[in-house]
Length: 427
Ligand SMILES: *[C@@H]1O[C@H](CO)[C@@H](O)[C@H](O)[C@H]1NC(C)=O
Ligand SMILES: *[C@@H]1O[C@H](CO)[C@@H](O)[C@H](O)[C@H]1NC(C)=O
Ligand SMILES: *[C@@H]1O[C@H](CO)[C@@H](O)[C@H](O)[C@H]1NC(C)=O
Image 1: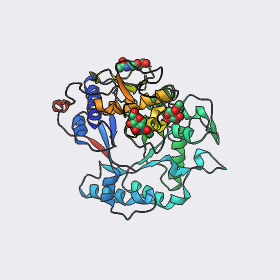
Image 2: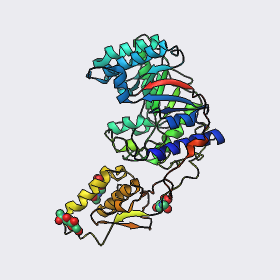
Image 3: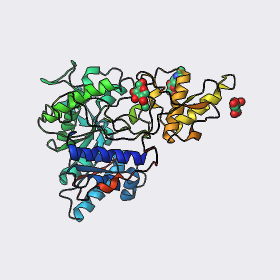
Image 4: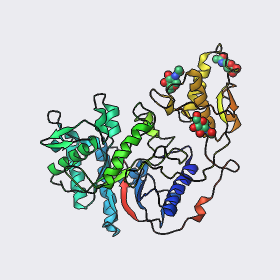
């Protein structure tokens, strides 16, 4: 994952996790990292927090040495097999397991019988999935799936809204078994698909589940709060699903917003965090699952740069000069920062053209750590100390040490053994 603020994000992650150690109040027991970054691993060492590590795609290629196979399943079989083999040969295969996270689109129920018990792996990748499942079973490794009720809603305008949550009225009746939410139905569709391959009892881990808070009309704080308020108590109570009552291992996605993530899936992709870019919680959530409406512990003593913003200079813009000049500058600002809050239905979706331009200029200015030359835009922009945020639409201030820009928090961290549960392969 590339960030505009790698240093800051590391520090935040370390902050939040160290606070968990000291204060123990966010109840985080396991984390999944998308790269095995040394600073973060060191921060986690000896914490008692279990870690799942993803191997980035570019490194996977090196491990698989495949010839650009056509579909992702094939791409991942060889690395999966090679990695587990290496683990077995190194004598650690019993407690470090390789697995491939699948998205929930590798299986489904037939349209004429859309119930979980009719679940089956997709016909076009059936053989590859069979190989993977048999391999995982042979190595006693879990099947890992990412389940996103938000995406069900995002991808289909017909999707019954309440069914994405855990307290809705929509239900599906599967031969007398009543499903009240798509998470359970999806999980059980996978179990039925595994059963068809003779592995109905395979351990299944939910590698990612969560709800984004910006970048789409359904990606907002009230919906995310509602989703987690249903999910967390359900998990804590070990209710499981109709087909598999009891404990399910689940990883929430994600921790902090990522302002440089690819937005190919949609503008919401940068807004999956339970915490904002500055490590502050977005909404109350009880990670202990006791269902209390309590505030999460945010990062403490976060430093912000000065309270100053970059905006469109009302005097500089004559608008008689080619309007492309403004458009081009806004485009430039958005290309090198993050304007995903500007889209339809998003937190800043109601701004006019002037507001849009100021938002874009400010995002660029903050990403550039408020360097004066980053607030010029051919003379169209100016710095202001007036907070130009509006209602729901926050014009953020960059985090970081306002004097030096360098922090050395890592030195206080104890060394120790990170208990690594799973070696995790990213798709
Ligand atoms: C618009 O005016 C600015 C100076 O104010 C100048 O730099 C820019 O080249 C002009 N753009 C066009 C398209 O004339
Ligand atoms: C503001 O920017 C967004 C995203 O680029 C765009 O969809 C919207 O149309 C813009 N609004 C105006 C009034 O220009
Ligand atoms: C600016 O104002 C918004 C509310 O409109 C507020 O949420 C935000 O914290 C303010 N920012 C600063 C740096 O004071």
